[in-house]
Length: 76
Image (tube, rainbow, N blue to C red; front, top):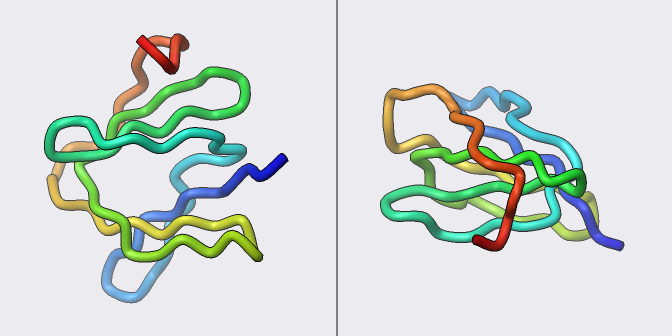
């Protein structure tokens, strides 16, 4: 199974956003991240890089709001 840790990059620094991410999908002007356990977050961000060998995804936030948790149902 391939799970990733998602980081937000800001001025060269990486901040961990979420662990064990199994699903990433576009959602309006941002991204929806869903963990293996069904936790879901919406981020106003764009993908900078995806490194499958090291199980990491780096994002750059495009909005000022903090990450938001949403429902646990990741497909609906």
